[in-house]
Image (cartoon, rainbow, N blue to C red; front, side, top):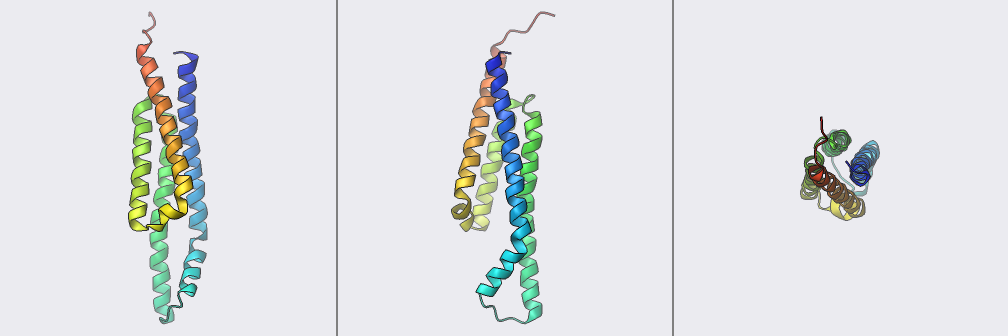
Length: 152
């Protein structure tokens, strides 16, 4: 393999790792702040339920938030695993990463349309990074096929 080919693979690996780590950090921070955010929204809404009902609403909201951000944290961990597998399956891993990230974003937007408005810059940056990783990995895979096998 040429140095350019090896460099392309390193770019793909680093981008997958970066997106994975940032996805985990971003969602861990949001998860950590979730209960306070939920309480703030409930206070701003001036809900007039009894204390037990308010507690139930808060717990229901919190369980949904944990599901959403826990899923995103899992996706970030998967990207970190993919950064380890990209050498064996460069095109497959990077294409799958991009598809999963876009799919997760669409699922979040369907669940909460404000997600796209609030997180658009970071999500666009992650999609660009994943497309870049995919292009680097495909270049690596294509160049690897063009290289004749070494004599045994």
